[in-house]
Image (cartoon, rainbow, N blue to C red; front, side):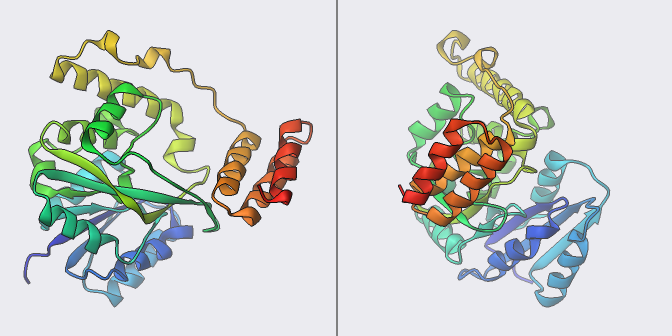
Length: 305
């Protein structure tokens, strides 16, 4: 068999509810010269049976199933199994648009100074209903400095939107366990010292919001890991720690469900998705009926703006 141009890597852990949609979005790509490496990290739901079903249908799928070893180990395992010139990351609860791989492949093939390319995202909920698009930082310097200067903002290149030059990822040593839950930001910082990063000003992936995702379930440990990654990057680059935001200055209080529903409703309203906004306004009221802000939100969503 010939070596594929792209290796798509997808770790899976108990995402059976969304997995078929994620797999199908890759199999439906307009760019077809890829291998699809799926690693089941010890799922206890129906994820493995779904993977096996699609592996029988499409020979581009290679899958591994074993006991749980964690996301960082799984990402590195996928990299070690990959053969493609480029590695496209994919999460098992998201949805790639059909032209995603084609657009990113053409960009990296034409712009050799770039080592990573991401894109804007469309936020969706657990029911695949749209909230709003997100992403306004596209250039290398803004991305790289953004990761250094605002440790509480999260990754500017959203992990499952990324396509990476495989040799560059191997050169920086892949993912590191020390930064679990923020292993992507650590990699972007190290890759940013090797070549250029960018986001395309185009939505290429639907990024799912739900309470089981890392950003909600492990936010505090994620912030702590980001802080460690930034501190290490500052040491490598000779940046004084006093010149950037310290992780010790980041205040985090886990939001209530009502607060999260409220955020999702405002996002949906800002994106013009009024029906979705109303859904979460009602959820916010049911979760916290005495908060006036929830009732204001409901009024705005009924009005439509």
